[in-house]
Amino acid sequence: MTDNINIQDIVKTENLVHKKSSVMTENTMHYCPGCGHGTTHQIVAEVIEEMGIQQDTIGITPVGCSVLMYNYLDIDMQEAAHGRAPALATAIKRLLPEKFVFTYQGDGDLAAIGTAETIHSCNRGENILIIFINNGIYGMTGGQMAPTTIEGMKSSTTPYGRDVKLMGNPLKMTDIVATLPGTYYVTRQSVHKPGNVRKTKKAIRKAFEYQKLNKGTCFIEIVSNCPSGWKMTPVESNEWMEQNMFPFYPLGDFKVPEE
Amino acid sequence: MAKLKGAIVIDKELCKGCGVCVTACPTEVIALSSEVNGKGYNYAEAVNMDACTGCTNCAVVCPDGVITVYRMKV
Image 1 (cartoon, one colour):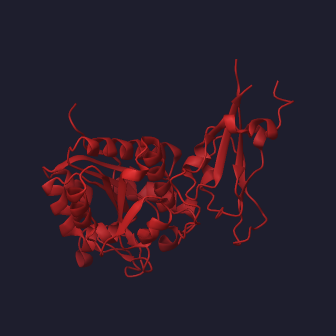
Image 2: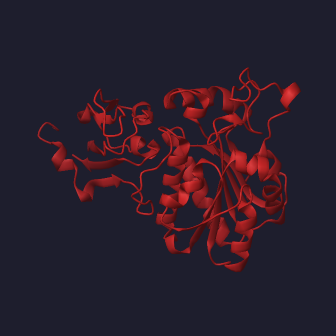
């Protein structure tokens, strides 16, 4: 039945089902092959495109690998000092309350130097969306131990694995902010498999919808990989993440609004 | 019964050869090429396009958004 159909018959504009979002720029991303940042950028761009809010969205970039996010998303973006993205987002949202404001932060930014800003913004219940990429490592500076590095995980500063007696316990930021009264929607997702990417995209969409209704802080953690920092291939790193990160950082919703 | 037939177009110069799409494809359409692109990566290519159903899994997980997916009913 399909013998006489060739690729040229299928590759037509009317048959298009998925292409790179128009909110993404043409710049080639500097991320390492297989990095979860790229996937997350794509879905943030897709949500902005689908909601038609390209002109009304302001993103705050952190310090870390994703500092150059403003080169890849064709929206208004502002760079914050290290860890201070939620504070800056607070100011922008209060001055321009009709805009959609989100921060995009890594674990070194949000869970280490920016802990105070994160917790207080969530506690105040600012109407912002915080997207938190957790790969358990300081990827940009060479794979040093971060507060989120799990027990036994090797990094360049813990070559024998993290020893909690010496280095303390890893920090679960999402669990902490879920207990605060100001947060409205708190969830932990990942972007390593197609199903997870689709779930994360839905979560981001939901968070922007809640922001439209002025409901409070939405916090989405995305457990991600760092193939270069973990010294693995992208596919190996995704498997390692499933086996080692997910038992400690289980995926799922932490705080879902009551309907 | 209508059957879905898909096709993918990969921008091989922008591909970084991470191989995430290879594991995401349920019908084993994609493989990494033995050739390298301008950046020196073994880019992804469609080796078994007849099996493609246009499910978009490969494009959804691609960190660099280099895969475009088409689908039609035959």
